[in-house]
Length: 71
Image (tube, rainbow, N blue to C red; front, side):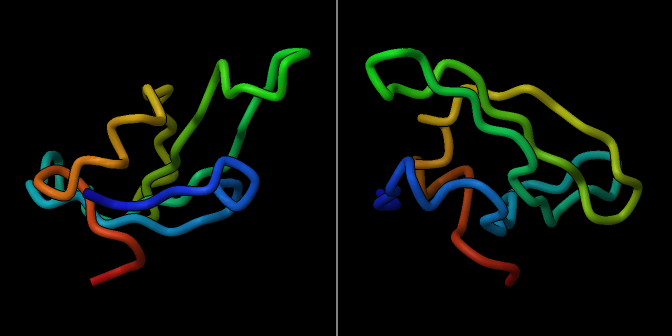
């Protein structure tokens, strides 16, 4: 399980463990918080083609799906 600080999530780098469409490396480009300082929206961008995807940021905690940094 990856440990994530919501405050440090913006601009963090991630590697997806399974490659889809040659997209493996990603950067978190947008984070939106509600009034309780909880994340309500997260957007990642593929490094290879700049495609953006809205994801549930909690998925990044799953070490079987995501690795911290570019590997």
